[in-house]
Amino acid sequence: MLVKTVFDSGELTALLSGDIDHHTARTMRLVIDGDIERYRPESLLLDFRRVRFMDSSGIGLIMGRCRLMQLCGGRVRLENIPPTLERLIALSGVRSLTDEGR
Amino acid sequence: MDILNEMTLTFSSKSMNENFARAAVSAFLLPLDPTITELADVKTAVSEAVTNAIIHGYEYGEGTITLGAKIYSNGRVVIRIRDKGKGIEDIKQAMEPLFSTVGGERAGLGFAVMQSFMDDLRVTSRKGGGTTVTMEKYIIRRSRAVQSDEND
Image 1 (cartoon, chains in turn brown, yellow):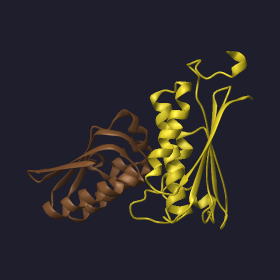
Image 2 (tube, rainbow over the protein chains, first blue to last red; image 1 turned 135 degrees about the vertical axis):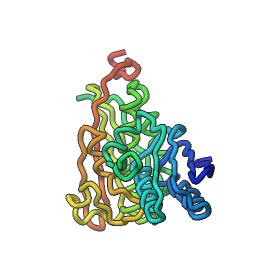
Image 3 (cartoon, chains in turn red, cyan; image 1 turned 90 degrees about the vertical axis):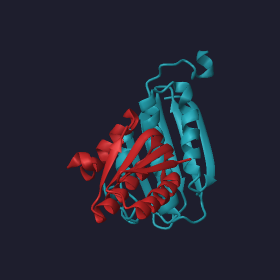
Image 4 (cartoon, each protein chain N blue to C red; image 1 turned 180 degrees about the vertical axis):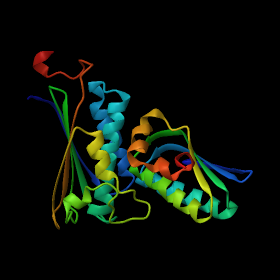
């Protein structure tokens, strides 16, 4: 299971698991976007606690969801980023698009 | 400098092979006893290069990707990823951060990641003739598991 979602009190939580690359990001995107469509959440929480690897496809995944949430007036939060992913997140500047960056 | 070990793999340009390429390079470098960060850096760079070959080189079509790796006795690791796809018209532009020809879900960070996670990056390409990405990283040897036979 690459992504598990829970919707509660206006927030959609997506628990991402395993490796995020161009191959797996597609599935994650389809699941998350399907649930955004279904629940129209005020905020999307992307939880990285179970992510073992991520390349720039993961950055694309975050950026795309930020764009989508902005369109419907919502926000995105990132949580539990493993230390090994910090450099990539910093390099991308993607935090400026999320809740933390505001 | 002596080559301690080398390998070459050829695989189809399918996205499931992004994982395979990372795992193969990871296993090949393991005798050097790299740190978690060193291994993550190399795996990320390899993943970017292989993804580029699939998306841009072959534009999701059929093709083969060749992955080569060499370990030198001074801890220098050279990794080469080659495709025979459409090639890059303007390498300088392709390497600019946030430049992406496909847009959408692509962050345009592939080359920026390779550049920042590896010690050296060279890209050669010919329109219609494919692209070769050569990356280098020094991995300080903590383990004696990789030795040339004479030194054993």
